[in-house]
Image (cartoon, rainbow over all chains, first blue to last red; front, side, top):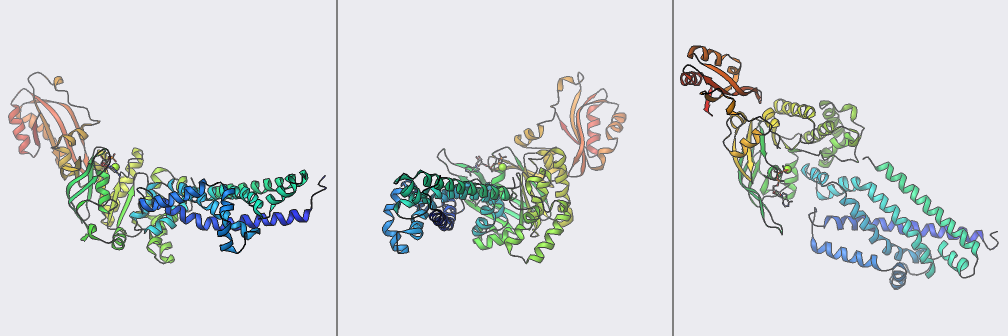
Length: 218
Length: 329
Ligand SMILES: Nc1ncnc2c1ncn2[C@@H]1O[C@H](COP(=O)(O)OP(=O)(O)OP(=O)(O)O)[C@@H](O)[C@H]1O
Ligand SMILES: [Mg+2]
């Protein structure tokens, strides 16, 4: 049992995966929420309806979402080197992960905002709220369950993206699974990494569900 | 207090244009409860939303408290809206916030100091009987309680006008009565000017000083509620009032009877006018239909009567002389 497993390697790979996930998730939220808000606000009949801006944003988001992540990883290489100075390791993985996940998350944020009753926006307007106040004090808090649920889905998608990023030298559990588990037929390494990824996904889902329950008041 | 001059609003769509408001002129006096009634699609919501410019008119002017709402820039408009409270059919509370925070919301948007926000919120919750619910969320309240929260929130910034968009349409009759009593009290105690739109004639009968009837974006009739409701001129008003009332069946009248519709108003409603006149004129009468009730607190009686024997014309003349409105049927 586990003859080939180097637990120190596994430990380092786990930490790398967590760093990639954490780093890219933070940036995905920082970029995805404003982008989702812009998509929503510029939409037809919304507070800052702007068909041109909406069409442009929507197009960019759709393009990025339609590129398979593995292709994005390769296409992004020069940009990544420009941004973080390397295309390897945790730092090198974060730009493509963010570019892959942020547009996806932005759409989920937009959907969550659309679910908010128009009446709430109207009531806040009638109370003299500015557009900025309507977004920050009414729309985002009301959409919070959907925004968090979307973050959970995105984080889980990022787990599998980090595994793919391993292929281009990012390290992490995915990298171990491929280099040892797949290329050297060390099935035990493969099994350990997969179980660890599974546990990670379970934990993310559980945290997400708890947070959603906490902020839901329906 | 509120004046609309030639307010027009058109909606353009692929299916064709639709004029939701067609050059509407309207004046609501300070301290008045003003009702707007009309069928679905008549333009009621568009009208009330034009007052705080949730709907910007294509043409015409809106004045509230001497300020031309239609001429304000966005910052001025936001300031003006704080003086105009609004409540909604579906309450439009923020589900994520507690009752307390919902009521405090407009004060916080305005940026009032937190100590003041706390004090004012506590006072409003107490005033509206919501103190026990302060820490709950809207989902935990009944419809009537939610509308009370909506009212507390609308009053937070001390408005001089309250707009009610079908505020009781989602409530049962008992809760409706409760909310109407509340609005009536606010009007009397705070001198709050109230505009309410509704398709429920009972609501108007109960609280409105004056009423306007809207049809296809135009005001077809307006006046003191009792005048409009007891002597409706326009077909739409008649039809809306007739709903739920039994039509008079003339065939049940005794043969050769002289029929008339009598309207008593004020304290004379409770006087034995009809029997006095019948005795002196030597006529008999049978009441075919009738209603004795109040409009905005003023008693009235309205009935369709068939006179037989004696001198019916003389009886009707005597009734008219006593201030009863006599109309041929
Ligand atoms: N956003 C909109 N886009 C297009 N047409 C609209 C819009 N809002 C209202 N209308 C149209 O304008 C007319 C007046 O609508 P409004 O909502 O003011 O009527 P209402 O009297 O409040 O009706 P209800 O009793 O059903 O609420 C209707 O014919 C409606 O179809
Ligand atoms: Mg309406």
